[in-house]
Length: 190
Ligand SMILES: N[C@@H](CCC(=O)N[C@@H](CSCO)C(=O)NCC(=O)O)C(=O)O
Ligand SMILES: [Zn+2]
Ligand SMILES: [Zn+2]
Image 1 (tube, rainbow, N blue to C red):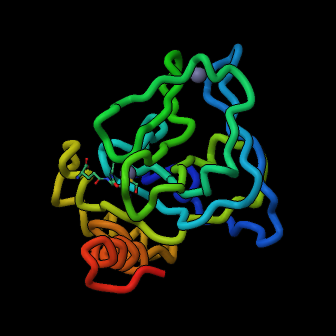
Image 2 (image 1 turned 180 degrees about the vertical axis):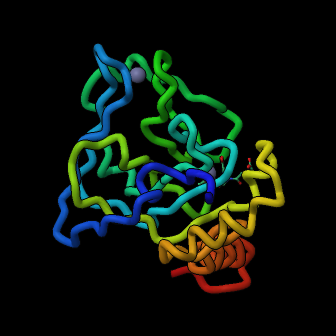
């Protein structure tokens, strides 16, 4: 039996809707939940095995996507948010009470500045873009996963139609490298 990866993908992937216009994300607090409203569908949704992204209890992977930061607003109980690690590239804004990450924002100069990282499982709405690939897969070993189980993990992702990478997908790695070359003056800026 392959280990549970994440509840959103373990029993097959539900496709999103191209006409979906967004919705609300809520933390897990029973009372005074933090609410974030997103106007639009997310992009680059993926499973992430890194140690920093928020994942539900028992899951090996998080499911995380991006949305332009001007399409995200905190609409309730924002006073409960705190930044988990101010030194990280992605400043993850989490609920102080339940620990759920509502959004991760990049403030420093970076290829992905302007995009916020979000977990669509925090929404009741249907239609969010489905996961497209699995990233930082080998990183689960750093959190104590037995390396002998890695074949099973990668095979399970592939059976779900998701390619696996140990960093990000080639288009995202290319975007980061292009940005770096542009900064160095080695490629023209768009
Ligand atoms: N092995 C490390 C990897 C951590 C890492 O680099 N995470 C990525 C992906 S997060 C969503 O895709 C990243 O961009 N991190 C920047 C940041 O977290 O600020 C580990 O597992 O910790
Ligand atoms: Zn909460
Ligand atoms: Zn991650």
